[in-house]
Length: 406
Image: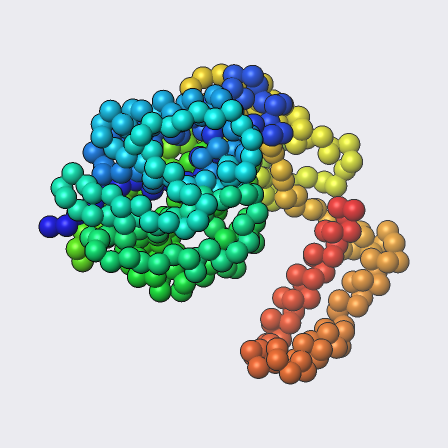
């Protein structure tokens, strides 16, 4: 039976400077700085453990064009580990580690095959005698806006065809629109697998054939939340499987806590502390943002520092250990406490606001604009009287809370 097994990872960003995080405790910051290299080691460990046929690294191996000697040395050492186990590596360079930059160059071992700046095919024969065609290219410069996908051409006489592409799927606006492509363009190539890179969020665009963004291997900031890693891929005749495996040593997490039943600072502190201790059971390094919802608090400027005080207290308690949980931010959605009669008596403005909210004709005027719209009205059903009352209650509450916060 024809069967090939390999690992697909991308966006290692080795030696990322972790910009804006130097306010962390020194031990945690050092751990985060080292995390991209730990992720690389875990990729190699997985490859050796699974006895894979090869490894694919789909771009942005390094964080910048002037890749550091440290990053190159660490990558070369890990590639040598794979070499001792007879595992080749097929890699491309992306927009971050393009080939136009100037740097002190360290050669990789012979098992590492780097694609050139033009789309090319590399042929590999596995130990079992299968012929694999791999197609890809490395970025010649940081900005590659051409649709390089048009240059990928399937060449026959292979058991499996694998495309490697560092680029942006159409419709995604979170990353630079480099080497753009559509899913249809990938599927039309009739490859057995597409190993993508560039987008740092894990995405499976197609199951058969598998078209996968593995995401980056280590979150580098608060926007890159969750466990990061790579994929173990098995291609067989008539069957394709893929399995995610984690590589991140430090994980960015956001937690939402409903504190509507919490009274007083001490209870608020203990509630947050219990969430932190629960996360510690995951036995990894965690950078945690807490978002408190329905925080019961009178609108009082003198109490505005409560979140800063809470964050400092939680950070003060944190122990510097392997399974650290560092709360780096606490935000809150405050539940405003207000009384309609009291506000109406305070100012004429609120009195007029509440008076208008009780007049259905004002709502009808607003709805007429929507229901008379030639496109929108086709998708709208008439509102019941109860639904209209609910809209008024919501609008009134929203306006008052926004005004009180200001």
